[in-house]
Length: 317
Length: 311
Image (cartoon, rainbow over all chains, first blue to last red; front, top):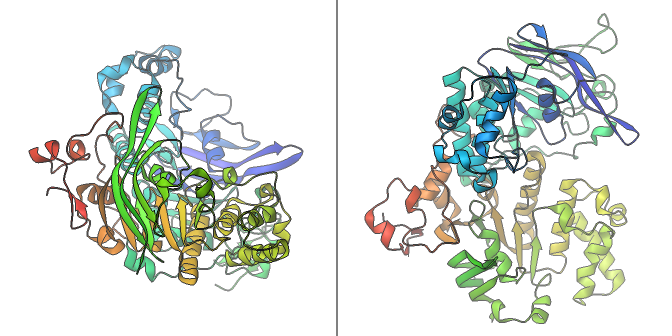
């Protein structure tokens, strides 16, 4: 459904050039939920915003159903749900205006009642303003707005991180229900790994602008290959005190480097317990190590250098 | 273990444009010496208001008793409280950037408390500050002393705040959502730090969080709050592994868990918490509770065997 090739986004921060997304390529199949995880500043939101054309890529291409999206208006097919349900709704518009606006612009039939029912809001919500709703209800309005044009693909950018536990579960189950009923495809961006595990069919792990691992959800969580993925999973606290007390976490030497000066080599090399000489100089490329599994790490198999495909560096596996 | 803090029937009421918001509605709990207590609940349940009221960091109306080292904190004047805050009770807040002064060097901010409480001279304070930074795992402590908070990462700032809170050797450390603003790998490091500090220093800890998972690694006992009341309290193993109150049970089912099969369905808690401007009748959770009985709507359940529930 969606194919991304060598997507890169660079920003100027003052005079410094900062690479938010660095040469990312991936495919999203129809009906799939691709979870995108990574820590703040890793570029996951920028990537999501580029897909729905809220940001222009510095280089690289995005294909939606085989066609290049550049210069085309695809908002009828691709929509976005934002993180902050307070900031992403116009406080001066009633819910009815918010939900009918997309249809008015695209000259399509207005179906506010149907949308409210889909997301589980009462009909009485129509004439009220966003500030009259709780965070969870506002997020439902945001979801209804994203559905207004019956899109096929939705980027969910941290839709639950601003919500409380009991409300987040309501939103996640709603997203899951809509995905199954309407046959939607999602890119689900989140930092809550347990929720990503719950909702996604496949997961991509991002670190400082690059994909370090992609795999099916079961593979990724049962057998994480990239040391960063391993660290992420080990960092999630478990609600079971007995297990938690005997849990040994791998020590992490340092904190992530500033994304401004990552330098050459593997972006994770300074925090990696398995760092080798090759990691300092050669950036590992995301490559298939098993069917449906890709890892960017020198620990796994043959590694091509960035410069020339002919020059092969073989590392003990 | 001796009781360090005993809170009795604490009420906190805010006045917002003429209306009264009853944020904390009569809670009682105790913290023993060296114990780590977790207070868990969703936003607006009164967990932060309750502990801020203890050291009068809020301008709300506070009623009740809070016995700390034999004295009632709530009776104290502002001047008397100043000798308690920082010296006997250290505090760590959620947002490490907002709690540090951006125009003061890190070292000055750690030394400040020691000098204010006249615990030692300047040279000794600087030594102690460096020692503290080592203790909380800040590398190159001498160098960090001369830096401004802006030069530090979020995790490092939180470590500095913990160092400040521990500077005067308080007997109680209150941490209000100390990991919420941090990334998952950094948050795990900070939780590990709390755990090791607890073992080393035996400082009592009150950890406030919205995340049930966070208390499991650090706390000995847990207090679960809902709509200004305590609905369940007990040892962490009991509350998390065999919760009694339907709210705690449902909260655990509403979170995706790593230690359970992926296919296990999430069960969201329908509805939303009650309006705290209004008076409550009966159990605060009754409108959302699947086991609700008539009794629950009329009469408030008393705390019995660790849970406030009629069932």
